[in-house]
Length: 68
Image (cartoon, rainbow, N blue to C red):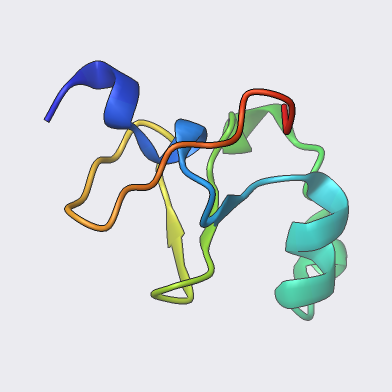
């Protein structure tokens, strides 16, 4: 898969700090989802897994141009 097919560019990937804090109960106890160590990692809503933003998979669907 090409580098353009990374999770970061997929419509099923959510990585906003607000979304992560709402989905990962207890995360705020450790600090927050705004941490620099998280980078751009996020959650795939299809697999319900926390993933690297650089990951690729066969279920990739590109974002609409106006969505980010």
